[in-house]
Image (cartoon, rainbow, N blue to C red; front, side, top):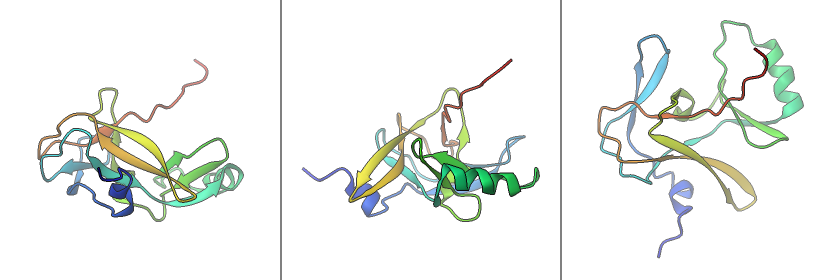
Length: 135
């Protein structure tokens, strides 16, 4: 059997295309049928401490798109200035993908995997799992 994390190591991503959505900015759609369980994309960007990210985020203007992913309690992946196509995957409460944290060597990496078969032409989504505080 082949080691599963080789998909991330070899960057064996599904073919995706950037497109303008109706009212949600940019999104990604599948250019091919993606099998259930397949690696769709990796969330890549600059790894920052939470303190450094908060300082940077305070400098972003309200018009600046911010793309980030909480890696753990101490680190954030900031894909705002540089990152993979994954930063354009939109949130859905009924997503066709999910994220998984994988350790490869000494690095924690974020893979985005298909929940079910994703048909060519379908938008790729995952649940951002934001927590809402207050009313």
